[in-house]
Amino acid sequence: MTSPTAAAVADDSRTIARRLAARSRPALRQTWINFKAWAPFFRNRAERERLAAYPFQDYRAGLVWRIVAPRQCWHCGKSNGLKPLAATRSVRAFEHALAIAAAAAAGWAVALSIGWFVPAWGARLGLFVTAAGVGVLLLKSWKEAVELTVWTCSDHVGRPPAIELASDDGKLWVQLPTHAMAELAANEIAAVRKLGRRGGPSRETSSREISSRAGDAQNADAAAGNPYVAPSRSPPADLPPIKLAGDEDE
Ligand SMILES: [Zn+2]
Image 1 (tube, rainbow, N blue to C red):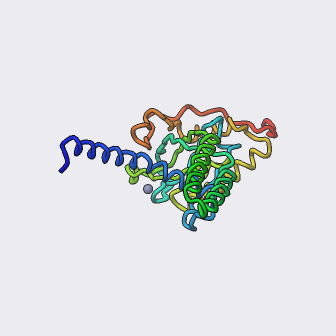
Image 2 (cartoon, rainbow, N blue to C red):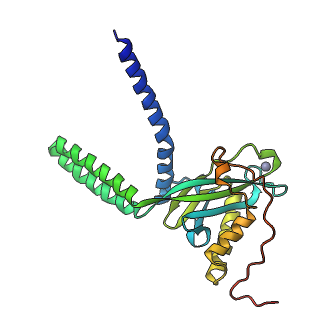
Image 3 (tube, protein in one colour):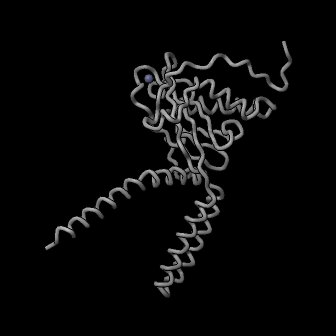
């Protein structure tokens, strides 16, 4: 028979376990998303077809990415009467992740072979390698913010899309809701990159242009409660046209 105190302790530990599981679920999910960015082999075809890779040169200023999805409703593809849905998200970027994983795998191989002869030593080494691998991964990682804007028609305002993001190797991998959107995004990215290579707008200018296209929709504070918020403010007055370095005055 269990005493009331023991029952309470069991209840507490169950609650703690539940909370831990709930807390670690998003982290595990994000780890899997990042893992697919490091090892694209694990993406299935449907995922690959909805993927857009935004290069840091054009879409990141400091540690902030500004991504505006192609102008069509994320759900039905309609391109008129659109409203922006803006959210600020946070992603963890890693450096040399694959090399660290390879080193850990080598460590595990050694631990396994030692464990074959002396199980206790092998288990200890395995634990040590795992802890060291996770530690080095975290040490070689940092957080980046993503100001993400997608568009919606009036029919689909209340249903914000879940968009997977992973920052890796100077690129932000964005899993867009549809294949058509990913194709449009790829064209946009190529066009912006071409401008950048021609010595066009600097990173800051092009991000400013992008954020003005988003209609000043980003509002981190308002987004804290609801991942996607439609802006209540009107877009800023027109900015002067951005001049390219090579452009002549008319
Ligand atoms: Zn729609």
